[in-house]
Length: 86
Image (tube, rainbow, N blue to C red; front, side, top):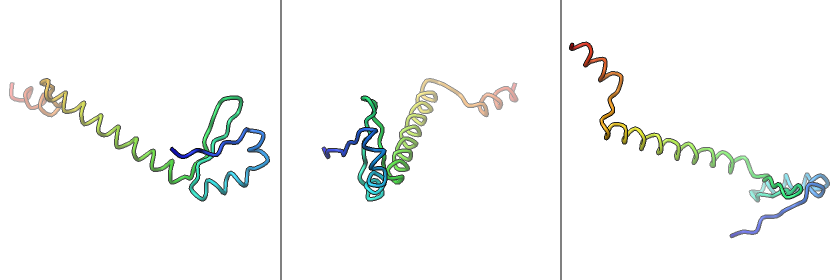
């Protein structure tokens, strides 16, 4: 695992441009303020994370839908057709 560069909040204030440059070059930076940490990352990393989260959410939704159908669940369209036939 790569060791991340970490700055205290005080250091980050004085080295802001260095931190931004590191992030622009693709190197995540951690800022630690009294044990609470945040990361400065390139936007591409954040966008890719959002894409991956959306894929996982989509897979979970599909699994839930499959389970719903497998357990006998019916769609509104199926129920409406059944009611119309009565």
